[in-house]
Every structure is written in C-alpha cells, then in structure tokens.
Amino acid sequence: MTSSRTSNLKRTRCKPVFVLLSLLVVIVFSEVLLAQQPVTLSIDASVTGAKIERDIFGQFAEHLGQGIYEGVWVGPDSRIPNTRGIRNDVVAALKALRVPNVRWPGGCFADEYHWRNGIGPANKRPATLNPNWGGVIEPNSFGTHEFMDFLQQIGAEAYLSVNVGSGTPHEAADWLEYLTTAQPTALEKERAANGHPGPYKIAYLGIGNESWDCGGNMTPEYYLSQMKIYSRFVRNFNPAQQDKDKMLKIAVGPGGDGPRWTEWTDAIMKAYAQHTWSWDIDGLSMHNYTVIKWPPAYKSVGFGETEYAEILKKTLEMDALINTHSAIMDKYDPQKKVALVVDEWGAWYEKLPGSHEGFLAQQNSQRDAVLAALNLNIFARHADRVRMANIAQMVNVLQAMILTDKEKMVLTPTYHVFKMYVPFQDSTFVPVTFNAGIYKHGELTLPRIDAIAAKDKSGTLWLAITNLDPSQPVEIDLALAASTAKSATGETLTAPKVDSINTFDAPETVVPKRISVQARDGKLALKLAPASVTVVSVE
Ligand code: AHR
Image (cartoon, rainbow, N blue to C red):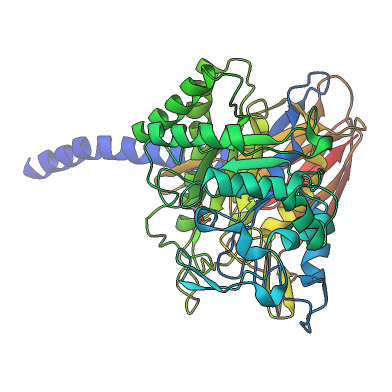
C-alpha cells in the first residue's frame, strides 16, 4: 500500500517534469534544426530605393596616438618609403578602398586645434600639447598642406572639423579663406608662398565636435548661438564650389540614446526649420560607438563567444538610434534635406596591454569585420537620411583599417570588409527578402543572417550577406524575383576563430577568398562559413 502510494506520487510528480523536459528537448532540437536550415533569399532588382552615397564609407583621422604620426606621417627624411612625408604603403592601401572623404583633425583634438601652428616652414612650426590624448607633444608637422596633400594622394575629399570650443569664428573664417580663395588677398598670398597657389576644395565643414562634451560642454541653446555665427561667417570662396559643388556644413548632433540626445536633436532641427538666408546646415552629425562598459573593458582579442555575441547585439542598436533621430529630423525636415552624418562609429575596446594611455590602441578581429558589415548594412537601409559616415579611426586608433609598427603595416579584417563593399559606393539600394532566423547564445538572441543588395552604376547587382552565427554555416538559396539567377561571384571573409586577427608576422590569417557558384536546376546555393561576410555580384 505504502509502496504503491509512493510510486503513484512519484508518477504524478514525474509527469510535469517529464513534460517540461520533453518540451525543452523539442525547443532545443527545433532551434538547432532551425539554425541549420537553408535560408531563402530573394532579390527584386526591378524595385530600387535610395542611392547609397559613397560618403558612408568615409574615414576619420584624428591627431590621436599613432593615427597621424607614424600611421600616415613619417616625415620626408624617414627611411620608411614616403611621398613628401606621407607613407606610401598606407596611401596605396587606402587608394584601394576608394576612400570618399576623411574627417580631420578631430574629434576632441579639433576643438583645441589652431591651424596657424600647422602651416609654414617645418622647422618654424611650434611644438604644442595634445591634452586630450595622452598629453603628448603635438609637433604640428602634419598641418593643413600635409592633410590636403594626403587627400590628393589617396583621392578623397576633405571633411574639415573647425574649432568651435577654444577657437573663434574669426580664426575659422581665416582658415577657410586661406584654403579656398582665388583672389589675391593676404591669406591667398600666404597660401601660395607656402606652396599652393590654387584654391583647395573643402567638400565638408564640421562646425564643432561633441560640443555637448569635450567640445565645450555647451547646452543646445549655447551651441546653436555659436553654430549660427560659424555657419554665417566661415565661408568657402573657391570659385568652383559656389553652386552645385558647394561645401556642405555639418552641425553637432546627438551622442547616443535617451532624452538628453533626443532633446539635442530636437533643438537643432527646430532651429533649422526656422533658418533664414544668413545661416544654414546640410547635415547633423551623430556619434555612436559600440562599447558595453565605460571605460571600455571588453578585450579586442582573446575573447570568447559571449563577448562576440554581446558586442554584436550592442552594435545592432545603431538601427534603433538612427530610427529615433531620423524621426525627429523628419518632423522638421520631411524632405530630408539635412543628412544624418554618423561621423564617429565603430568598436571601442580596452586599450592594448602596454600601449600608451590615451592612444586608444586596440586589435581588430573577425568580430570587427562582422560588426563593420552590420553597420554598413544599417546605413545602406537608411540611405535616404544617412548620407555620410566616418568610421573611427582610419589608422592605428580604435576600429582601424590599418595597423603600423615603424616600417611594417598590416591590413585589418575591417579593412577587408570596406574593400569588399566598394561596389556599394554610389550604388542604388535594392530590397532583399529573407527570414533572418535566430542565432542564440545563452540569453542573447541575435539575427542569424543579415543582407543588403544594390545595383551599381553599370547595372550589376551586388549582394552582401553576413552570417553572424559563429559555429554554424548557413546555406542561402538565392533567387531573383524577376529573372533566373545564373551565377554569383565574389569574395568571402572568414576566419578560424571569432577573435582571429592579422598580425605583422601573420598578416593573412583573415583575408577574403574567392567564391563562385553556378545555378543548378535553376537554384543558386551559397554556403557561407560561420561568422563570415560575403559580397557577390549576381547574374
Ligand atoms: O574617436 C575618439 C574620440 O571619441 C573623439 O575624439 C571624440 O569626438 C569622441 O568622444
């Protein structure tokens, strides 16, 4: 009796546990199955969206750590091969990226930069300080002419960030006159005497940097009062830039999510809606780094899947942030005349052990390649509003394209993504339909894949697909909505581990490989490795 009661009790207690367990097994099993299922992806090339401006592939180069000195500038007397002091290897690598524009000289550095220190004979330039970034000496050897020479060597446009923090409208106005006038003024003569008789082209003017923080801790109202003065008086006189090719002015915008930032965007855009003939803006900047803890504590190399998934989840917040600020901009500027310019973005990790305080030196892994692709995809999907972006930063700082050590140079996984995405520059967005699926790690849920498509100027169709899952490959069944796909050819970037990096000794651990598939039975099947980025042209 007792024993049967016990066993009955056991049975009744067992039932819910058993049901729960079976449910769990079914869930886990179906998740595993789902994570292994092919993804059907369809592109309707007959429908086109906004132009994906090549400016979203812009770079940011600040006087910070070894971003300029050593990374770009080695001086004309260096043993490192250079052209007028600018490293040839770095120039060649950047030329291959077709860099559209470079933002310079900062960042926080810009709001303490006095341009006159960086012109004239090299041996007469004063040594000043760089209090923002390690308190090191700023030799001013890389100044206005060197920057413009560098741009000319790599074929990029200038995005000049003028000093609103510690400078004056007068100083900035003089800088622009010095750079752009063709009239024989005193400043024009000085420029000619310094080696450049003709006016320079300045495509973009940033009016301040993070004026709500390192750029002067201003309230939106105070910043607006300054910005209007700069917008009015900091003129571009280049005769070739008066009409269609006019210099675009970019105001300081938000630095994140939350009321502080939405209020900032609202204030600037509200003022814009009431602007008069005497001042104007063409862009609103936005800064958004992928950083989980502050100060940045995540490692740039030597991490596992949890940190991989956490960082990627964080980076995907860029989409919501753009939605939030675009919605405010739409309210005051429904015609989308003002561009949202994401002129500082990228991963910000803990500094490399042993590196200089304030130099923001970090490694760059396959995780960063995936992160870069996800952000570029987000910008492309918002191409009607996001018309410019600048990754931070170009060489040796934060999520860099290139790392250097004296005469050595290595291209990072992020570099390769930017190179693979070159066909998307100035292309036209084409919608892609797919079920992103799920990549799950512990409590974290992310999309399994992401994809964008576009048509380039010659009509070629391009597709970029990212497989976020670090352990499962994904098979893509690709179809064109209006015709039959014949082949897909391009490159894929994979790596042995999510934290694989390229080093000076092993520079080819993460490099793109050719990928080519032909249709079989009218089906185009692309097999993509775990944690990979792939770009193909589809015929
Ligand atoms: O990119 C490094 C710094 O981050 C920039 O100088 C500043 O604008 C931002 O806070």
